[in-house]
Structures are given as C-alpha cells and as structure tokens.
Image (tube, rainbow, N blue to C red; front, side):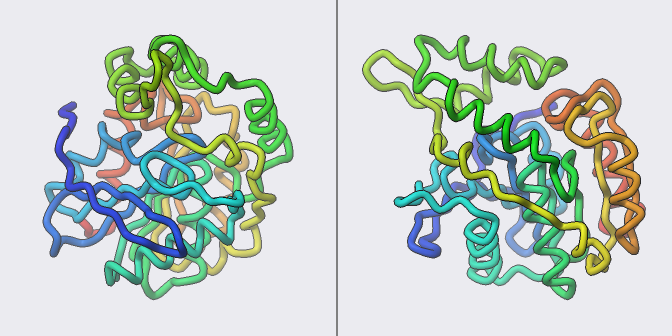
Length: 277
C-alpha cells in the first residue's frame, strides 16, 4: 500500500491548546475524520488515509497530549476535554455530513459524538474497544504510566515496544511510524505524547448512548483482539439501530496496523454498501 508522505499539515488554537491535524483529499469532499487511540498520533493512519483521500476530505487529528498537538497543563485528559476539542475542530472547519472513524479511545470519542450529534454524522466506524471498557484497561495504562521508560537509546527499542501489541504489523511500517512518533534530543529518543494521558484514561460508559446513534455504524474487531471480544462487539452492533459488526483476520487490537489491507477493505465495503463510494 502507498504511504503518503506529504499530507497538508494544519493547526488550530482550540480550547487554549494548539491542535495539529493532517489533511488529505479534496477540500470540498465529504469529510472523514480519523481519531487515534491512547499514545498514538495522526500518523498511525498513514497506511489507510491516502487510499480514502481519493474521494473524501480526510482529516486525521492529533488529539490533545499526542503527536504535535499541545499538552494540557495542568493535565486535562478526561473524556469531556477530548470531546470539547473534537466539537471545536468540527465547528471551526464547518464539517457536516461527516464520517467518523476512531480506534480505541478515539473510537469512544467518535461514537459519543455521533450519539450526541446525530444530524452531523453520516456514518461511524468504531474500531476495537468496548463501549464500557472494563477496569483492566485503566489498570493496564496505569501500569504503562509507572513502568515505561522516559526515553529510548534507539528507535528499535520503541519499535520492539509497539510490536508487542501489533504482532502482525510489517517491520517497515512500524519503523516508518516510529520515525513519525519520536523526537531525538541529546542522543536519546522521546515519545511524542504526554505521559499523563496514561494515568488519566477516563471511566468511559457509552452503553446508554448507543441507541442514539442514528447513522450507519460499523463495529470493527481484530479477530485476535483481547480488548474487544466477539460477543461484546456483536452486542454493541446490536444496540445501535443501524449497527453491523465485522472481524478482520490476522489482526489484534490495532487492526489497522496488523492488517492494513484487510482494514481498508472492510471500511471500503461498508462505505460502498451505504452509498458513500
């Protein structure tokens, strides 16, 4: 799959923070907004976004505390903080009739926005997280907060860390992602996200919001994911009036990294089936 090295880099001052997003495709195309998960950034979509940009205005946001967006001081990384940013971005760009695609934490934000703003969202793609994540999710991230090193001696150390959670991802793809996700200072390599996001993963509970999602919605699960089980994915899709569920083979939680071709295919088929392509 081609990797687009030159998306249009944009920034906006929203809610007191500088937020960076990457934009591809025609500015008059139907908007498609990508939201990454905890600890990721907009470049995690580099294997997917270029293909979709041929027909959509693709916008990949660095959520607060991630990538090249600003860090909140004091730390403000609750669901409400992220949702205010998302709403401000959408309002500032005047987006209507959009498609929202989110992974993990970003999927929770996308689904909640779709539930609260049904007239503005044309379709939703929710990737690999329960609408009410069990408490082990928070405990896992808290463990990372306590134990992750502050920096790395080489990018390969960071890549080895990613490989633990994306076992099927191609090494060259992870290396390219690492190049976009690290900053070198004084012979050390630093992550481009605020460590505090790990300690402040919110108590999300979207179960009561699912019936308010009126647009076509696709719940995507990596077939080998330990974060979103098959039964939970089916139940979530069943609770959304126009929901459906699909599994991506040879994929774990970061399905878009483990199997980018399979991920692109299920997204494209979903959009085709509802007349967006």
